[in-house]
Amino acid sequence: MSECTHDCSTCGQACSSRTEPQDLHEKLNEFSSVKKVIAVVSGKGGVGKSLVTSALAVELSRRGHKTAVLDADITGPSIPKAFGIKTRAKGSELGILPETTKTGIDIMSVNLLLEHTTDPVVWRGPVIAGTVKQFWTEVVWKDVDYMFVDMPPGTGDVPLTVFQSLPLDGIIVVASPQDLVSMIVQKAVKMAGMMNIPVLGLVENMSYFKCPDCGKEHKIFGDSHIDEIAASYGTRVLAKVPMDQALAKSMDTGTIELFVGDYFENAANIIEDELKA
Picture (cartoon, rainbow, N blue to C red):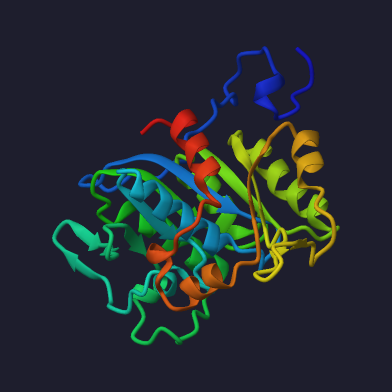
């Protein structure tokens, strides 16, 4: 018998120490129903994950799907503000009840549990990761077709917890046009590959600015390389979102559901086609 490498996936021997891959997914609340789960990720902060998450939830909701947002950015939650939700979440004998937006999108965020929305969440990693799990196991998600998970930046505790604990059907990587985007995308894509989670595509935010007077497009952060980057990783570009003052204002004023634009139509088409709820 050859020497044990402790990597059972490469071993053809049968031994007492051999173990099969474990399913680490947390069990969904027994009163919940969620068909598809999509995480919106990035290797760095400030690129617009919450904007993309909110806009996609709105776009698919407009198409007749029941959508939900699980805000996994525990220390920097912004989903309630984007939807103008100021009330606190409630509970029942069934579990924690998500707040519902004006157009019927269910959301859960740590800010819905705090006494004041400006209270900081000063928790260590394991507690934060545990909270994300609770949002899956203890919240009553009713008849959700598409759930979007707004992730914190990076590849630390919470992204790892979400990748391992939730049955993700795919991820969307958000980036900006700066030169370091290649490295940022690579980190997120490689992590997804390690966890065997499909990459649905890339969204480039702040892609350009269109002058309202002359209509000319200006590359504020330099020329985009997102198409080449997507091709190099065997994926595609879902959207190129410009610097739009109206879109930014809708996030700041809690009126994202009222924003009118076609920036996310292609991304929604691909989600509908490939992840039929």
